[in-house]
Image 1 (cartoon, rainbow, N blue to C red):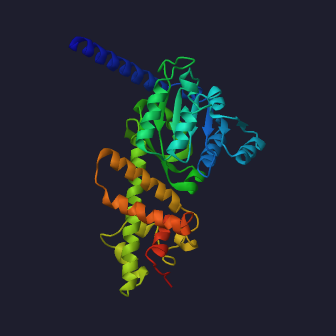
Image 2: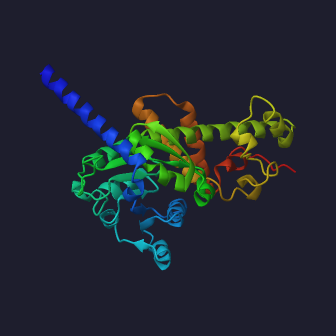
Image 3: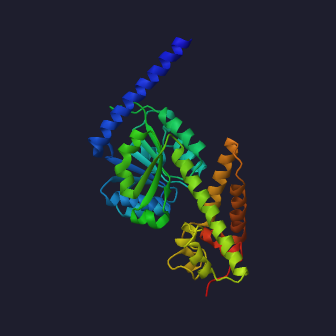
Length: 345
């Protein structure tokens, strides 16, 4: 039994080494031919802009979305559209997805007319999911993808590969092609896909194995939420104690309290120009999206048995904001609508 197990492990190691070596060759030679036809699924505020940047760069892109109005807009511009994810997969070498939730991702990949075509042979050699979802779902989808044989075997793989690659930067960065990608999956596949990432963004960070990109994203947004709550709470308290928020912000930014929420994305109307608080909290990162990401963080913490009291408190606060009708406002509106903070005059 021990000898048999050792042989199996050695065989797996050999296969992985061969795969890594082959993809390393792919990443340095003949890359463009492997990206001859791209598929893009999910044409919302983020996905539509990411897809357009690929199109502007000269990639041959086929798109799909459940919103027929958006599909018609792309079709009217001469972009090929399809009627289902499976139809996109049939004509694509690489498929990128940008979807609202874990359930949407599971449905698009494994549901009826999904990308994986019931586990049958596939054309795409690589799938990239840029949705913000829980790492457990990313790993389940990655495992399902790796079980799908390719219609045309590549030198570097006999099965399809998967990268989870959520983004940071929001709609403005998606539009300008300056997103940051946090990528999980096989490192050699990440290296091979860099031309695509650099077309849609300016920063790419490799985070480790499957699901680690998704884990990095929810941890980043958890820290961002808690930071915004801390800054908002301190600024509201300062107001109540008679200190102007402009003065207190200046103190924060000259001392140990300095952070992104104070010096770049200040939540107090009248303190900083060009941020959501300066335009009635319109635009930016919607409170409902922050609530969703905190829910993902809380669920992941529960799954691994980690105590995360700040996560739970932040989740409750942003859920309350949404329930009170502020779900479409930027998450920094917590200063006004939860802490009852006042504008700076």
